[in-house]
Image (cartoon, rainbow, N blue to C red; front, top):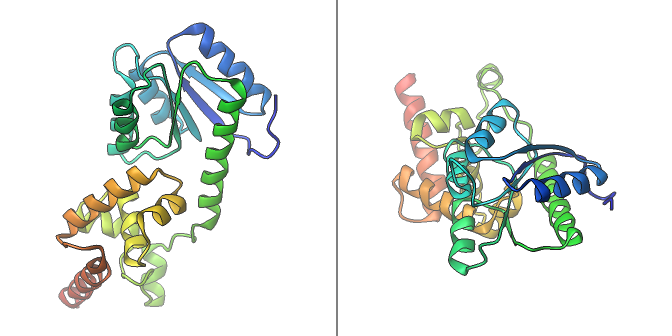
Length: 232
């Protein structure tokens, strides 16, 4: 079964049940994707560090490190790609926790192959659209040469990280907050869940020391102007 509308992608399957993992790999390969499989949470982290996949299918009940811990580690390390949780755990609390930690979708076992491939395709299309919509990053060197700020708030993403202790993903969220985007709009722009967008927005506000989203642009601009004055 092939979904021609879905872009070809490298997909990491994190699943300790061999029969299920093999079936997933076969169907995803038939759909035109490159597939890698690992059996436990620590190997998943190693695989991502060696080569970041385009999408992860993540079981929760894994040896050595459970799926929630894997997801939490990835997101805290600033590693972002769509993550689809596949789990027999169908309780609402588990789903909420998965989305809170940064999952983009959650499918309860048992599931149909057609449903899974459809969800995989949807996540890949969203991620591809978000990448296509992103402006080319402005380098600090180019900005210095032209004398122009790379964005309305002045800082490059790397400068935001260094100045305010943000992750790169939070720097992207800060830019969108400064432009007045809502959590659903941020989620769509960055191909992440609304829960993840909300969590990042709250973390950005805390790290910037502002009490409302409407103050983000002003706070960043004021800090940028102050830094420029100090450097002069």
